[in-house]
Every structure is written in structure tokens, then in C-alpha cells.
Image 1 (spheres, rainbow, N blue to C red):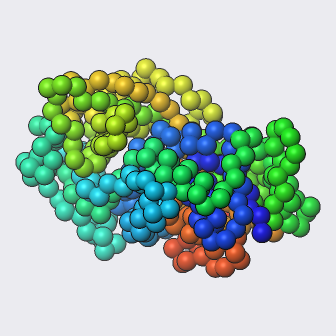
Image 2: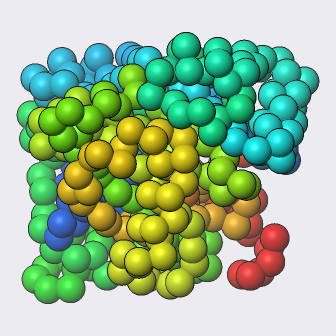
Image 3: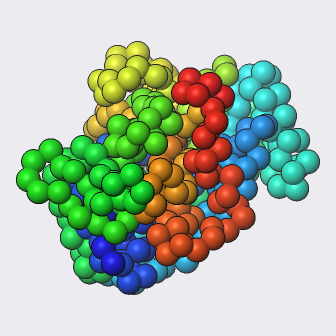
Length: 380
């Protein structure tokens, strides 16, 4: 049986590798795999510190996925013969003013009511745990189970694992999923012959909605800008843990890196909705540096070595779309927003279930795209 996967970001590559490992003959269609939002991601695996009241289904999905990350990384490393980039030092969340502290206190209370307590710390305790944090920080949280991954190390490992698993890389742009009204036939590309397939997985990120009428209006591009900073001689070391923060109500994060040439710290991420615009803006760079320096003053001596913008695939309710839709054989795995890296393990496992015609786990069921079947585009 032949499976076509459209999209070579973290979700598409993870799905292709997992399905090939499960016995499918897989072709991945993407003119530039490992680019886009996956290439510029911060790599936070942070279901708890990303949680928000009203998004309990997303929290449950994220917690299930972060628990699966260690085994996912181990399997990937064994298959690829190279590291997967997982970091297990945990996350701290910092707040500056009283309003920011109140918001974190509200988050801690919300999580406690859900049975997911976090440790509250004052500013001195935070600095004892993470000395890179500066004196403007008045308090925060420690969340040791929120992890991180070096996104570019992960993507390299996924490419290697896919190659070893026999995934065929088709470097053409997909323009449509083909069907006969009842079941999928394959994928149409911008040039050359169609890719015939018994099943198709759409994992094309922010571009997914254009590939089949059943996906129209379900995913939109959400722009995020990031910076990569490199420590210079004499500068203070970067934090050992991921640092998330609120600075006068504005979110910012800093994620450490170890791999040579990847920068020592990734700082992000702005959020805006401007269609498919991927320009890095002066305002975005200014805001990220200003807020990050309030939390980690030592970065003032770092070199700014990269600025980039990516388009996250946003859904209407912030839950991803993981399930079947449209004609028989069409599987969708997109709409992960800023949680693509986090949700790669549960999404890949669910895609294997879906293409094999098996039920997905309970924590994946709320992500079924059928939840939007009766909701017109622009509603909900």
C-alpha cells in the first residue's frame, strides 16, 4: 500500500517515518523539506506553561505527547543513528511586575485545580535555580516536566530516519489531493506526473487548506518571529533551562541550544496575522530583544546571529486537526499552531492508526476535524 505525505515539516516527517516503520510504502512530497515554521521554531515542549483556561483538550493532548517524547526521541535516534535534540532540564516561567505575577498565580491556580500543580518561586529562588535571570524578575514558576528540543537537530534526525526507512522524497510542490468523489487517488504536483497513492496525509502546515475542498478555511497562517543569539567571549553563560516570561503582559521565551552553529539561545516569538508575510520586522526584533534582556540581562553581550519568521498553521480553536476528512483515504495532520514540535509524537502515532483504519487514543479524539463539519468558515 502506497501513502503520500504532503509536507516536510516536523509533522509530515514524523508521520512519514512512523508510517514507513509500520510497513507503508511512503512518498513525501515537498520542494523544500525542513523549512518553514519547523525550521524557525523555538522547540518548546511545554504543554503546562502554554496552557490556558478553556483549552483543556489541548492540555491533555500536550501532556500525553510530552510523556511520549523520551521514547519517541530514543526510537528516532536508533533509527537515524544521530541525536534527536531532546533537552530534559525543564522550564522556568518568570514575571516582572505585579500584574505579570498575578497572571502567573492565576495560571498556577488553574493548573492546580486540574491536578497539575507547579512550584511557585520568588525572585531569589528563581535566580538560585537559574542564575542567568536578572533582578527585574520578582517571581515565577518551575515546571520541570515542560521540556525542549533543538528543532534543527530534530529535523536532521527525521530526514536521516526517513531515508533509512525507505521514504521517497519527491521535491515538487503539491497543488491538490486527487479523488474520484469516493476515495483519494493521489496528489497532483505543479509539474510532472501525479503521485498515485492509496492514502494521502495532508501535513502542509499553513498551506494545508488549499489542497482539498474539505480543508478549505480550516487552517490559517500565524506569523512568528524569532532571533538566534550566540554567546561572545566574556559574556555570561545562557540559561540551562527554557525560560518563559511575561514582561508587562507581553510573552517572551528563551530556549538554550547546544549544537555547534545553532546559536546559544533562541528568543521568540512574536505573533501576528498578516497572511503569508514572512518579513522580519524592525519592531519584532526590537520587542524581542527588549523583553528578553529584561529577563536575561547578560544577553546584551551576545551576538545577534539570525533573525527569521515562520508561519504557524493556526486552527479556529487552537486544537490541531488530526483525523480523516473528505473522501476515503484522506488524513489530515495540521493546524498545530505553536505546538508542532510538542505534538509530533502523538500526531505521528495517530496518523499510523488512521491510515491503518484503527481508532485513535482518547486524548486525540477532540482533534478530529469533523468538529468543524457544521461550522461555516469564519465562525467558531
